[in-house]
Length: 254
Image (tube, rainbow, N blue to C red; front, side):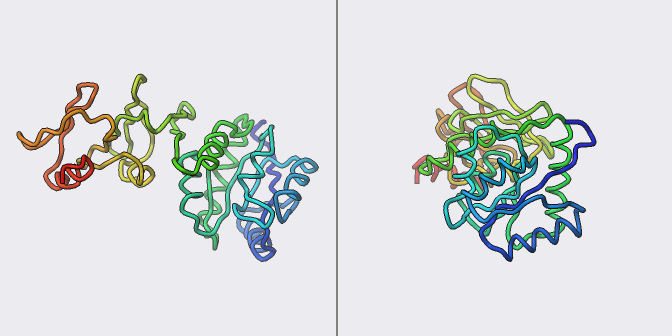
């Protein structure tokens, strides 16, 4: 696609009021013309086949299934997806792990404009669909016992990583270095606080203002000399005084 590619957006949502409200916002604030609407998985699939959109605003929970069910039925996902949803903790976490965009209902105008701008940029740089990200999303969604993979977005591209293979994360100003077992480190444009929030509920523990570690890779917790961790790869990572109790609890020492 070239820089003059026109956005061809559709809306798939089972709530007429939500569809109408989003359509009005897209026309008024984003100068976008909606080429089609659908109210569920079945009609959404038909709409995608007939209209061939390059941008889809996709609701998560619908009467005949979910937006995830719809994506699973499509082999060639040569379009950009922006999810729209009311609060659903697991679904949102799965979307974040996949580095996909989403908008919370009721939709905020500024967030909508930012999402559309991001979509424009992606579609205008030879965008051919986010299959790898969607695959990670579907793997996590249809294995709800545990979120297994995460997409790390860098300037070079998307890196799909198994969460269990991440050794630790280290703050680097407004960026975070992610250290992966058997691989080189990856620098992502997220703060450590954002990464910690994303990985909450997993085996990761914040042990220092600059460090987030996977407890499965800790070999020894040394309490003397201020306190530090010895990782299985031999690295020594400090434990801050205010995080000592948290660290001890995570390791079952309290």
